[in-house]
Length: 78
Image (cartoon, rainbow, N blue to C red; front, side, top):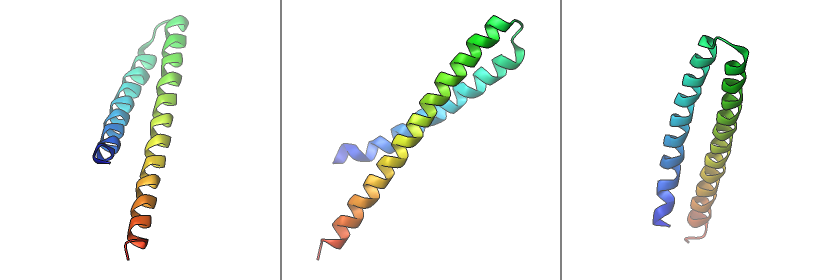
């Protein structure tokens, strides 16, 4: 279980990196000159947002798992 404590910080770092990448893509989309470039950036934005949503769901699920595990341990420690 010692590795479990590194999972959430890793996910949070990954989400921060993904959000930064999303900002970069958005800025690029604003400066895009032609429709092909905009379409490519829009596709990248969709993929990046999907990754961010997945990471958020995973971190939320893992946080719930940790809380339930802790609650179970406290309840059954008597």
